[in-house]
Every structure is written in structure tokens, then in C-alpha cells.
Image: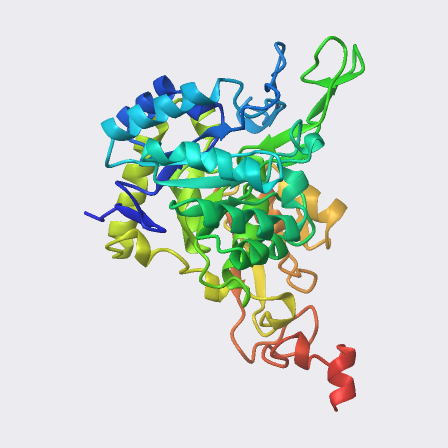
Length: 433
């Protein structure tokens, strides 16, 4: 059976599934229940300094986006960092870590951007026996307006400066949590690395307004007739998170920097995808808030079975396996040509493929009087839209054209051009000739 034991920047845990810093990790009661359910580690909900108290709203804190079956796709929250006293949190962290020595326990931190504030709180953490600290440079609401959270995470110079302070005043490994609310996530990752960070985690939540109540004309969640932007998370943000994780994993400047993957991890498959793109472990929030802590048991069994089937003996064997296959568009193989094929035995004649292709794509699907749907190869560009809208798995597939076969759409034999860098329509290629 595959070994799911994980060592991330020296922090050991029985599996790579950690709970992210969020409401599920706000107190001892929650964290103990999480460990009992099987989670390998937690990042304790973000602690602040003992300055002005953090005051959360007492009305709705979450907004949601649902699929047609009311499956939760995205969650927007306007909750701030912990509003519980710092000393109470530290006492609970110490008790939990002593009782669960085999689990990872990392403390998320967010304090004002001055050296003394960081020095003070780090000194207070020493006695907790926590395994590490995570610097919350990602929260996009409430705290950002106070010069913290994503207000720091959007300025690489601040990230580097604060990370240096943390490494100066703390014995613990340091993870820098990055904001997705930025043009190029590689820049803050590079800054974290320059500052001495042991790892980065991403993504934090995306700035958002999920919906507007059309009776009150106020954003939701609504507090006394008003709404505000919040942080968006859940399955809907996973594609954005995967892209950013891959960017850091394959960049020359950050290659080798350990990554903790966050953003819409709901199943073992999601976790495996993050790890294949370079994440050493994953952090989960929305899935636990949707299905409860025991969801991790399905993640553990699923990942273990997958690794057995693939012959992977440890999680380290999975990490980064997909990174070499991520490339820039201009290097994609233009000699790879496919055409859609419809399995007539599997087709239920719903017509979705025809409607989508006829109205919005390349008019490459024909419909007969008896609603038989066939592909017109001379029009098919293999865009894959028909497969994406078809409700029957594997009813529509793609056939790869072998080298030398004539593409009926272009009239050219497959194998003419390797990629865009050699294509005659590329101005750079014409200039080189």
C-alpha cells in the first residue's frame, strides 16, 4: 500500500492533507475533531497582535455560487482573522500539539508591517511547540484596508522585508501565503525566496462579489442593507490555483521552492493534480466546510489507491510529475491533429453537440432528419467543445490523425510544421528565412 507519510520543509505528517487557515481551524475543539477524523495537519486560523481588537460582523459572513444541482461551487467570505484573544489561542495550540505530536501544526500570522510587531508575536509563539509559521499575505478583505494581508502580498519588497524579519526572530520554518490578486504570482514568490522563506502556499482567496440581491439591490452577504467584497474560494477557483502553482514550480527563479497547494481541493484527484504540478502537500478549507471533517478519509483512500495503481511508493514520487509537460503556447506541437468521432451506439440524440457547434463554433456536426449526428471532418478544428457539452461520457472522442494523412480541413499532410516557432504565418519565422 502506498505510503502517504509526508515531510514538507521538515514538517512531518501522516498524510499530505492539511486544513488551511480558516474557520475550521479557529479553536482547539475544531482542530482536535479534525485530527480525530484523520487530517495530517492544520494551519491554525490567522492570529494577530494584541493591538486594536479584531471585530467580525454578526450577520451573514458567507455568500455562495451553486451548480444546477445546488452543489456548492464557490464560497465568498467576509470573515476576518481570529477575534479570539491571542493568549487563549496560544494556550490551545500548545495543548493540541503536545497531545498530537505526529500531526503538523502551523500557525498563520498577520500583524502590522513593522519589525517590532513581528518580533513580539514570534517571541510569544516559541513556547507553543508549533511546527512552523505561515505568513498571511493573501487575505483580500478587511485586513487589507488596514495595510495587512493582500496589501502586503501585492508588494514584493514588503514580502521580502517581512520574511527576513521572521527568519531573523524565529526558529520555525516559514511559509509565505501568496495572494492571487496580482498580475504575476511569480514576483511575490521570488521575493519570498529572497527573504529566506522555506516555502510558499497558494492561493489565498480571490477578491469577489458573488451576487446581488435584486430585491434589496445590495451585494450578498448583506449586513443591514449593505454588502462588501470578500474572498472567493472553493472548486471554482481550482483552475486559477493550478495555473499559479505551475507557474512557480517551473519558473527558473523559483524552481525548487517548496509549495503548499491551496484552492478548491475537494477530492483526492484534485490533490493529486496539485501535487503533480509541484505542490508538496495540499491545504483544504471549503470541502471541509461543505462536507465535514470526515471528507479527508475519502481523500486518503483515493490517493492511496491511485498511487498503488501508478506504482508510486511515496508522495514524493508524485510531486512535480506534470511540471515538465507544462509549456508555453508557441511550443505546442502543431503536427498533432485530431478529429471528433461520435459513437452512434452511445449517442442519446440530445443534440447538444450540434447546437453548440452550429451556433458558436465551426459548423462541423451534421444532423440528419432522424437526428443522427455525424462529424464533418472538413470543418472540424478539434476544439473539443462537443465533448465538453456532451452529457454521455466517451460518447464523443478525438481520433488522432497519423503523420502523412491529409487533414481534410486544411488540405495539408499532417507533419508539415513542428510548432508556431517554425510556422510560415509566424513573422519571426519568416524573418529568419
